[in-house]
Amino acid sequence: MAHLSAGKVNFGTLRELARKDLVTLLEKFSGTKAIFWDEELTGPIGLVAEYSFLKELDVVKMFQLKRGRIPSVSVKNILFITRPEIELMDCIADNLHCEENQGHSANKEYQLIFVSRRCAVCEQRLKDKGVYGTLTSIDELPIDFYTLDSDVISMELDSIFKDLYIDNETSSLHQIARGLMTVQSLYGIFPNIVGKGRHVRNIFELMTRMRRDIGVDCDPPMSPLFDTLMIIDRTVDLVTPAVTQLTYEGLIDEFYGIKHNTVKLPGEKFQAATSGGQSPRSDDSAVKSIVLNSAEELYADLRDKNFSAVGTTLSRKAKAISAQYEERHEAKTVSELKQFVAKLPQMQATKQSLALHTSIAELVKEITISEAFQEALQVEQDLLNGIDTDKVCPYIEDFICKQEPLTKVLRLICLQSASNSGLKPRVLEHYKREIIHAYGFQHMVTLHNLETCGLLRLQQSSRPFTVIRRALNLTVDDVNEITPTDISYVHSIYAPLSVRLVQWAAKPGWKQISDVLNLIPGPLVQETQPISMDLRRNSKNSIHSSIEETKVTLVFFLGGCTYAEISALRFLSKRDDAPTDYLIATTNIANGENFLNSLSETLNNSLV
Image 1 (cartoon, one colour):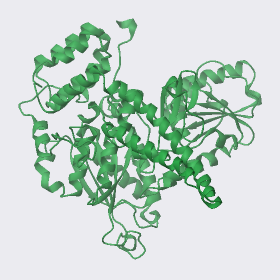
Image 2 (spheres, one colour):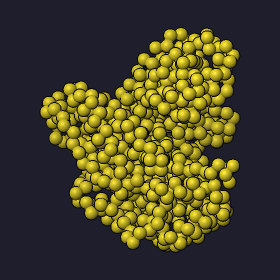
Image 3 (tube, helix red, strand yellow):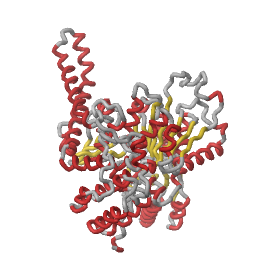
Image 4 (spheres, helix red, strand yellow):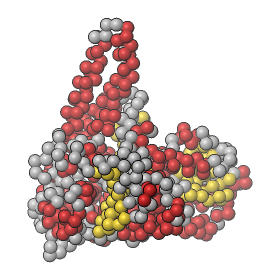
């Protein structure tokens, strides 16, 4: 995991803290252990500790948590590791009742571990089910952020946007504030906290209260490694999640879904791949699971490129590796042969990596060159440019008539709504009526949710997005996709509003666009946190003591961010004239499909 420490700030430290907390907790329970995982936690915890690591802590078996009898396993400790969810408490209660009925409970100790916080409501549920006393202990594993890469950390919580903006459940704000406090404890106090959106002020106030409760005297004794924490509420920019990502990493996520740094692809495409390095490992005969992160040099080079530039890059790499292999014919002396042999392992790893990403690129290209994809992309770009956004879109109507996946239909309608600052009443009602007729009225709840959170709404007299788009140059003609000069390359036409705001904050500053900011939902927050003089960034002991030092900003996305947004921020950091390096924190990684799926609900079939 050396790649995690390669960034401007060492996010590997955050992973090590999580591992340390996990080890401390597991060592509390002497003897052999079997872990029953909440299925939603296996991926995130896998970013912290592999099974081989857990085996060293006397974990002999791991199972998925589900109702009914638990598998017979000869261990001293049964560990339930779960999120604080009522449904999961019912599942654990069912497990424990089965154990008691079979007479197994006398020979084992049962431990419950909440990730990331204990929950009184869940504990009361266990009491109501009559199994609370069966548990030997109840603990919490306070992991709020998982390190995805050297510049990205994520809470891996897909439901936060729905919790906040549909269910009005704000308890997750406490977890967010606590997670950001953990970041402060490792990397120093954020001197500046700025942001835009409905819940930014709430997070700042929670952090302030937590810091006051802990005591300023307990502030981390280090000069801050970050200049600014910038919080971007997802409601500030509802356009970007609906737009198709066109970077290499973004398209892989669009078509196959990247979960916790892992993507599952059709296995038959990788028959030639070997088992070394970053090559795929087999889940079953039809699927290959591939880990994607910057530990693989080629992937780090490819991931942020517009897909149009990927083929050229792969071709150049292939020629370079062929030239390296040809060097063996030029080796005349023993010394030269030894030098060539010493380079062989790296060359072979590069060759495997090249074969892997050539296969992935071919999979992606099969979709991107299709007529259906190109047509949908053209419709997106027309909507972004405000073309015929007041009318019912014939392409969307065709989608509905063909009963294309509902998520694809809703994604385009939401894009039309967001880019047009709402839909005219007759257009919105037409879409809703057609969806109900084609897909069934059980989807009325989903449509209601989309209206509640603002993804679907009626147009008012003004059209603020049109003003915002022009003022911030969100749509760009003649984008250079191969050697980009602007962040709009990540969508080939559209610069993510969220990242454009980040860009303006650094230079020339938000004061220059105050009128535009007033058109964007949610209050503006610009606060400072008091820091002792000897810890200020210009102190002699500070690693940032030089006036020429580039500033470092942690951009936190509340409600999820896309890989395209991450690529855009990396692009800004790499520019020669970049005034700021950006690192990314987020509640989760989102794309159009999983973002809409998280908001989807259907009426119970018994009510239909």
